[in-house]
Length: 156
Image (cartoon, rainbow, N blue to C red; front, side, top):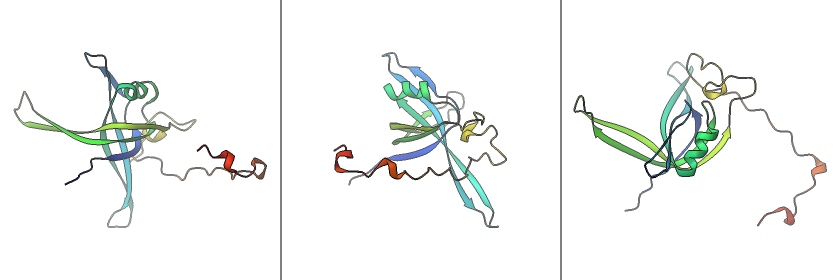
């Protein structure tokens, strides 16, 4: 039977990536990514629900993350889910950690100009710790001077 293990996330970094190197010199980046859902509660009030994801990137993607990603930056991550387990040395209990192993990363944006470096591009997270959910500014429509798209404009 076939199976699929694929995750697509767009969210904001909760902290700067932590970059380490293996003995073989391979870069490994670890960081947390917050995604946010807005739902109505039973009283009809909107509430924000933030889910935190542990992201791991390797090789060049890890180096790029270390160079360009900062707390609050919006990023697209595509990858797969992996859950690791181990026995706690102090308590002997079984511990688990679920991570997203990133295979694709796209830098989408950072904090807006004039706003702090807190996650979501705001200097304060607010009462709910939610992201800025305002509608983004609309881009102006292309002008007629730009001309029409012809077959020569298509790159394939």
